[in-house]
Length: 92
Length: 362
Ligand code: SF4
Image (cartoon, rainbow over all chains, first blue to last red; front, side, top):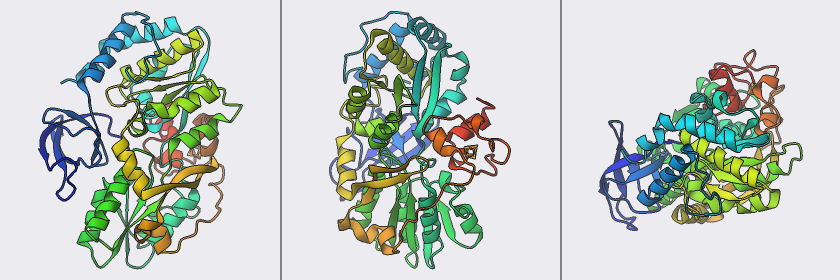
């Protein structure tokens, strides 16, 4: 049921918090374009942002800093660095 | 391509597996809660490369698989009513109820249409004003807010021939019920990726604290899953039982409050029957009385019966992590994806379907 791959925003229509007009984003991944609803997304996206999509709705706008942290931890693990793991609630 | 290709970098895999092997110092039992994880683990052949002593158990996180036969029977009853057009997610089509499936109902004349999104069901209603379009809805926290948004839109647009039959379920009460099983003896949970996008990693804190369990939120790429397993293994080695987030790019500590607000505006918790797990208090999400005109159960006066599960099917035991598909005498014989006996063989995320498709007998 879940589409695991985030899709890149190429256009945004509508205005945040204004439900009188459709809140729609056009997203793209691997050459496929789709329209998605933005009513539920946690952060209003800009062009170039990546979105997690579920059944036609964006549910999350990816955060560059979080993705960086995510990746840094992966690299450290792959390098066998047992960084002080755990405890960093809400950050990793 | 930030956010995607970096997390598909295969050169990470071998060193991550090495790190996992170095970290594990005793056998670990880890449940992957989510059906999408089960599929990802099989598709990428992770089971074959994981260190010995790490036992992955599939959990109840496939929404189709945990839909009770009673709900399927109710769905079939509504779909068969005069003037009704049923809209469903495709995975539901062949799930058996007590007598047949929606697929069987369709060949007997019911209108059943597969949609990609609940908003497609609403569009069907607008395009077929002479019929009542009923969205037969299964799903967890990832899906429920979308259905809520669709009901609110139906209300705004005054679409009166649209209704939802909610078999929605929420994850934390089911996990709490499952973890009460002393036989399960889990060391860690891989918490579902996109359910957590909505409910937030914080939602697992009571489970971690109450059951002495590591709860790690995991993404869907092989490196995400390995990272999460390393976190579980490090916690086990260090004697910690905490919630950690190995999918920070998609899941925050507090989740998506906007989606939760919409969900709670339209739905309220009720006791709900899960296939194989029985009735779990507060684990279902029913349409609030204010939105009763969009509630198919009320509109059609449906009463869910107390129906038994299909004979011989072990889905219940499999969803509880007690058995594997190979333990089921019907697996790959009487029960195949083409002719399924239980829902775990129907859904593309079902454990039996995953084992069948990837030729695992264990
Ligand atoms: S193999 Fe079929 S009958 Fe056996 S548990 Fe799985 S779905 Fe049920």
